[in-house]
Length: 155
Image (cartoon, rainbow, N blue to C red; front, top):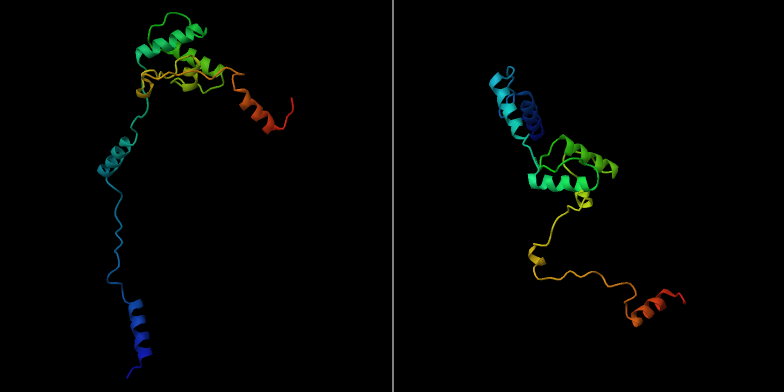
């Protein structure tokens, strides 16, 4: 009766015209209720977790204040309180050196004040001797002669 091409055309047209039996149904819902909204806001509160250093220890504040007093940026006594006077002095010190002026001290400012990290108690520092570089002009003459010959400069 039907040729194979006609059967194939009939099946394809029937498949295209018939409602899809296995398609995903689209569900149109009413706006979400209040409970759904509160659930969403509780999820966003979790992502607002505060990170980083929140406070400076009083003994460290006292060290910073003493260094700022030494550099003539802070007047008064070093009391270990991170208050507006200390914050203002630190911000002024950082601004004068061209660094950022945020509430927490910048690491460059702390190093500049002589309050950088102390590695004297590090594991690899025990029993080691940290000698400075040799004084200039202490290179052996044979090494110096080799540098002069390699540079092509006659003295």
